[in-house]
Image (cartoon, rainbow, N blue to C red; front, top):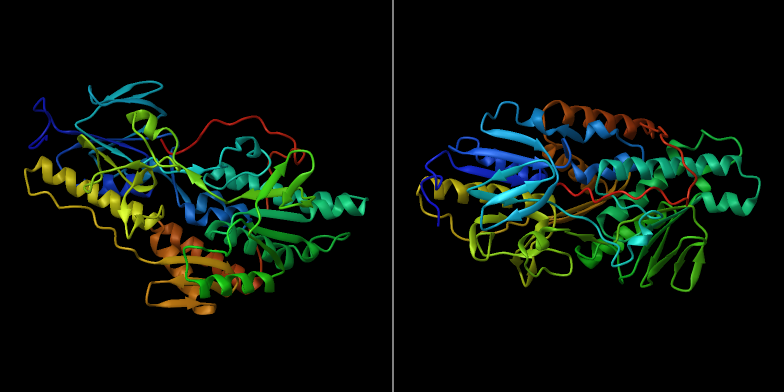
Length: 436
């Protein structure tokens, strides 16, 4: 095990793949360490994913929840930021290959994050985009807003109903939040914008193949979520699979649903990491790791966040932002201890900080274990928690001000449509854009 510096006697080289919550936390945790950090990501910005649904439903602009990576590390002199796509990792030579260059490492932190999974039905993606990237959120916003515009100009009542029908697939936090946000958008923000249609007549269906929404929450909070969404006018479908038909819309069980807009919120996967290391992953693509988050047989490689399968309470650590941040800080501690020949910090222990999900105006659910909240108080807790975790100083104030203004006026911002295309026309294929 490497201790005391680089094998060549130079400043130890640390390569971090991915600038999500885990990668940023690892890099910041090494701020005062005598290391040379190379932070590689396919995108030039860090994204606050928990608020992507706000961009997708015209509540916030992309710039409110994303920041240039170079700006974040402008004052951390031991970090070099590289815009690149990792193609391969050579464990024997200890180098990371991108499409343009090769980066040697003494320690490697893999924090790639995850993307949406269609459970083997990738052909559905053009018709039901997921929500993991800014480009996804802007695409969904476009489809939602264009649907109302096309309903306004449609002469056929059936076609009008099709455009005013929205299907969200997946009853986890993302699906619940998008369903509630589209319902509020149609009933409040767009209420006076059209002349031929009544936006509040929009039909929003949230379909979950399981027996209840928010399966990670206690049943009582799941029941409250269902009731709160139904009060907003959202139709809930439980216990039936959704099949997407590229010509006819979708089928919920045996029921055909003519809908012009669909959003996928049903699952995630971690691409490529298992292939890089030639190891067997779980069904979501997560790589099993040692108690110190290292790859078995390679203590110099640490896998964190969504990419790592870490045992916890009979299952695995959830793929949420607090877990990734804890993993990043722990990885930095491990690297510092080995470079400085200090005692190892011991095994990684995940501290669950609770589950939160917002449903709509004055409605949210919060599970802190023994403490559980719902309704108005939970909604404010949810908002304060997200503002607290926003990176930067100026952005949280902007987001807080916009939320407060929307709360007072029932308004929405950023209702811009860019790059109009016919709905249900297959877009050009896009390459995987996970944060690598």
